[in-house]
Length: 190
Image (tube, rainbow, N blue to C red; front, side):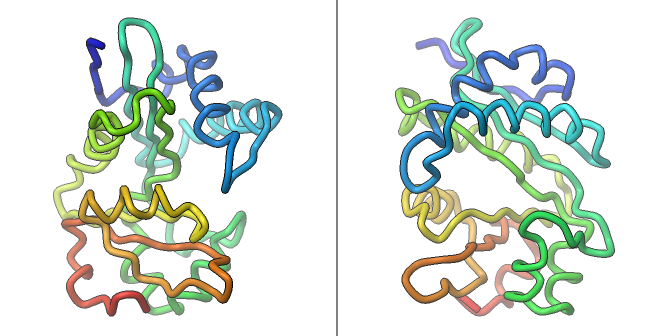
């Protein structure tokens, strides 16, 4: 495998839509996500809009022309959004921490690696590619508490969980990046 991981523009990422779709189905088709091909199609429609977000950045992992994974990120707006799962994040962290830790930071939105490329460093390379240029280190992401493999991966990569899981392992887990200035001050987990 001759893998390259590189930061790419939104238009370059979109030019690999078929590969992104294929990895999406592979990465999110099983537990705990259980998302079918229709979700991958929905993601591609959302991605076409996401590339216009302020601060959008992306990374692509390729073996030749075969997509092995990708990551996307952007700048979290202020005030904190009220769509998608943002209200649950704000409720878990509180208004003050949400504004201080997340608004204006680099939000890693998606990271997906094909099953046959896991454990090869592709995920770490993608995560670094969308966060390493952030001089102040203010990066964050969230995942499902039920995504134990993903949470373990982020922990190994130095990301700190700052939310407490709800009963029965439900809910979202917010992680601050390894260079986030508030990471050391954050109780583990809140």
